[in-house]
Length: 208
Ligand SMILES: CC(C)(COP(=O)(O)OP(=O)(O)OC[C@H]1O[C@@H](n2cnc3c(N)ncnc32)[C@H](O)[C@@H]1OP(=O)(O)O)[C@@H](O)C(=O)NCCC(=O)NCCS
Image (cartoon, rainbow, N blue to C red; front, side, top):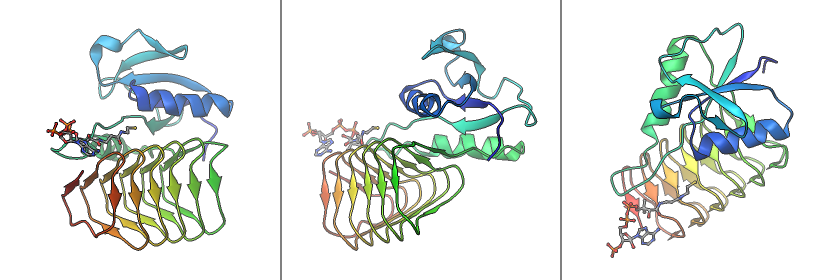
């Protein structure tokens, strides 16, 4: 943790949610870097989009960054690789992508959170839960006891992971999906919105 002002990478819906949390916490956000050059000069919640990601030089002594790149899951895949690539690029330049935890998230004792996790409003994490680096636990998602989530995954709004579930890296669990207790979901999977999963899911599978 540092006191430096934030720069958010991204300028879409996910960046906006992160910005909302940082605002609620009274943090200073100096600007956003977009992946869409046409957005430079616009603003998000009054914070300027100051440049294009990858083409704007940042000083580690002056700012800290948060990965605000969202993903659009499809039958082709989770779309989370781009987020992971953005993190890797900034890490190669010596940055650490900071985490963001909404003040109204319910994080119980004995929860393990890796670097750069993003826990949004109303999410609940129960004892023994563990979240891998850069993963998103989105609005009102439930991560019950002893759930393990890999790196760069996204548990979308309102999804419920029951006790002892394991989710691999780069996997998208869709909004409102329910994963019953003890299930293992592999890497690079997509669980469709609203789906109930009652059997283990191998790597790379899309379930609707
Ligand atoms: C599963 C999913 C990834 C498929 O996306 P897609 O590749 O764009 O697929 P399409 O929307 O073209 O749908 C293809 C077919 O699958 C069906 N389908 C899509 N999602 C489904 C779901 N969640 N449950 C059941 N059926 C689904 C569609 O009805 C369609 O059927 P049809 O061909 O008979 O009409 C997507 O629908 C989904 O659920 N994404 C997660 C959304 C989410 O979590 N959002 C939170 C953002 S913060």
